[in-house]
Length: 196
Image (cartoon, rainbow, N blue to C red; front, top):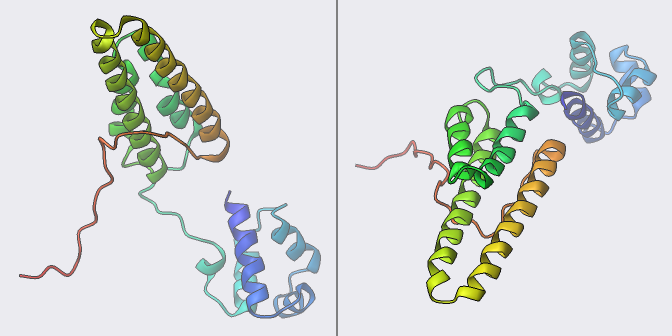
């Protein structure tokens, strides 16, 4: 992932300065082949190579190589799998489709922004599904035949959406939980200009 951001940044900065790969090679003493491989994302360049390229482009080092936040944990797919996969326990143990992702979200939300976003979305979706199933079961006394069909449809839809989100989270770090009630909202940032 870091290789790709360096590749994109180098290509962008080189084109922004109007340089060809050959011209950049002459200015930096880095071979054209190395520049090509870095821009394609085939290699992870040494720090010294990135420094030479930054000097040759007359830019700051962090414009090519974004610095990691030391307080942010590196993304691990196992946590995304747990956040999106543990709701299946709710099929066996009532309310675990909300409780387990909620506990995981509470535990991992501060470690990485992606865990925070995914956990919040999963908890909101499964809380909405649980609420909808409870309402559907209450309607059992009013519309007995319709209730059974509605409850099964809700469960099948939520299982399908959960499976799709497990795959999307592991492959692209993205999710899609439609029709969720936002029980857990994003934290609002405090404004630095507070008027008295």
